Image (cartoon, rainbow, N blue to C red; front, top):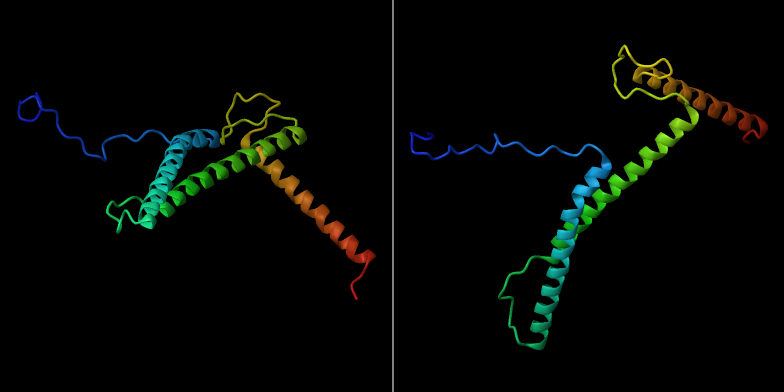
Length: 161
């Protein structure tokens, strides 16, 4: 029996309650924002209608002042835009990740092991993550060298006055 044998369960601290795990990928984050986005849109439209109705009543003279306090329209709209911005950010990040993945498979014909540490048992035709990073850094350095060479050649062809 709990709490001095009375059969009452003990109160849990809010810190002891486990939070649901946060989604790791951008698409899951977008899916988790759809519910709040719908609710925010609904609240925004409802608040706009209430504000319009209240202003109409004041304009025609049936209401002298604000009797019922309704939520502020600008706050509801700001919340809606905030969620839209989050969705847009996650969509842009997802598109960038897909683009990088496609570029990686196009220019690097070896699969990359998803683990950061070097494990034994990785097939011979697979790059480890550290090998992948060194390959990418070499490609970046080579691209910068080509860029600098092209800039220098362009300056030699048409020198500045």
